[in-house]
Amino acid sequence: MKNKPILSEIEIDRIIEMAWEDRTPFDAIEAQFGVTESQTIQLMRLNMKPKSFRMWRERVQSRATKHRKKRGFELGTHKCTLQKSISMNKISKKNN
Image 1: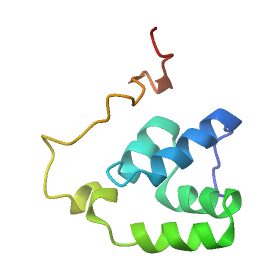
Image 2: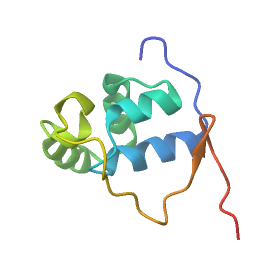
Image 3: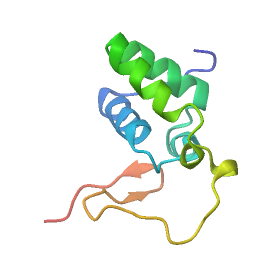
């Protein structure tokens, strides 16, 4: 990957989790981790079983929600209550 940021195992896991989420755009991954869409795809290819990668790729290939410019909405997006808060490009710990 060109200009590949150095990522920890936890960050790679979070990027994969965000990429699997249908409503998380690639732009959000890039804003938080500095990883472009093509770098995210490469990361997914390297860290997933081939069949799982193909299934994911088919699902998100043209999904409008994965590409902010193709989205028909900005407000009113769903956010899971279990999703961790994100601030200053860091994942904050869950408050108990």
